[in-house]
Length: 165
Length: 165
Image (tube, rainbow over all chains, first blue to last red; front, side, top):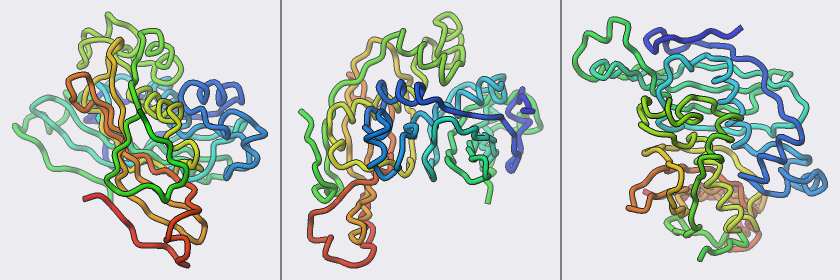
């Protein structure tokens, strides 16, 4: 289903790459929350019922990490990913519930080639949708990708920014 | 050391709130990586040596989650935090190493009051520094805070955005 990117130069702004499904058990939600986000609405069903969420849901940081893990495991960017620079923006639009099968896809949103170092900084959208197709989380981590191929590698300096509208 | 915010209306843009120390063991780093970021440089010391990091370091998502957990455990925003809307931006400036005692502080960067709903959307900077004072991670999660006090709650509509320069 998903496609492995061997070299950053293969990417074009606007590319959409399906990753696969992401889901959360109650145990995973509470285990993550105990370590990294021990707020009542991520730990306890009863307390969550009176929160603005209305039920036990995953920490937003858990949702983000699980999406990243799904991408790594699917091997999409694994062959060329050197590291992360940051996150250009992230929106948690809806709670992430246990027992729901969400669908993750990647969208190439920006590419800043650095031919001198054979690298590209890529803004990659991580878009998580629920079974009805509604966006649950939309994040844009900035990946540093190896890019040893492509016409850009002959240029000397920093190439112009290529960004989605 | 840190201060508990009981109501979002207590915050002012520019406020700095110390949280405390954050550190990572090798076991915590590899455990998080196995679940959420199974890339070689977060799993294996040998593989990490030949990566751009030069040694085993925590996943950036782990660094982010650990900082958030430290804030919740310190109880800074716990009394008034309703949930998270997203992250306005995040930079991983340096790798996070095991066995180093980092220091986390919060900076109030933006406040958008919603008096009609007795809430404030607050952009809170999470700034993690190493023992030399260099910034390792700088993130701005958008918190939704309960704000039942303060002069703003008498106004009817959405108040103007208050943002740090």
